[in-house]
Image 1 (cartoon, rainbow, N blue to C red):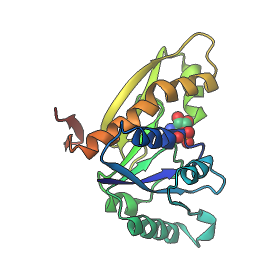
Image 2 (cartoon, rainbow, N blue to C red):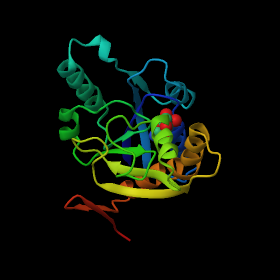
Image 3 (cartoon, protein in one colour):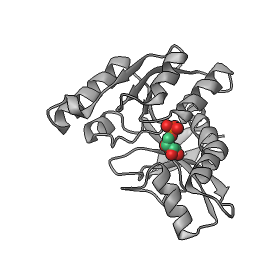
Image 4 (tube, protein in one colour):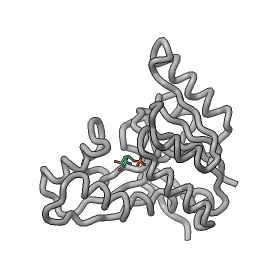
Amino acid sequence: MLKLAVLVSGGGTNLQALIDQIEQNKLTGVKIEVVISNREGAYALTRAKQHGISSEVILKKDYADKEAYAEALLKLLDSYRPDLVVLAGCLLIIPEQVVRSYQNRIINIHPALIPAFCGDGYYGLKVHEAVLERGVKVTGATVHFVDEGTDTGPIILQKAVYVQPGDTPEVLQQRVMEEAEWELLPKAVQLIADHKILIENNIVTIKE
Ligand code: GRF
């Protein structure tokens, strides 16, 4: 059984996609041990409670400095002994010591086709605003391993989504979530649960 710790900050639609697929037995051999939020009011926490999943909130303001927060986050994660940490709409930059402790065991869903529209400042709606401003015709989503950089780890899965005439950032975000994110994240977790992921020289290959 692959045990997950899911880190969230907002609405939790990607978390919901994982919950739904597990409950519908479409995602198998996986259990969400805990949902951890860096924001108190995150609706993702409500989703966890609605499905009887343990949830925790860990706020930066409760710690003296970044080091203390990082230590507390690592201790909290370790207490649940997850096999995989999933960043699902998580706006927290994962502290280096956490990335090191969970090397190649943290994945993130980014709402663009990395290396486009990613890195510092590209998150949530801002990604789709930049996509529309640039006038690209195709965007999409990416699931990747988290390394010490921002959106720079080995890419696991990607899916393209067409930009439509008249798209607003909100409409485009919804389409990218519906057509790509909510499909790719559970799929990537299943591949990891089934030990089908190989990483060599920062390149992911998927075993048949
Ligand atoms: C969305 O912008 C999504 O594209 C990105 O994080 C934001 C919130 O996701 N992954 P969620 O609804 O909290 O999963």
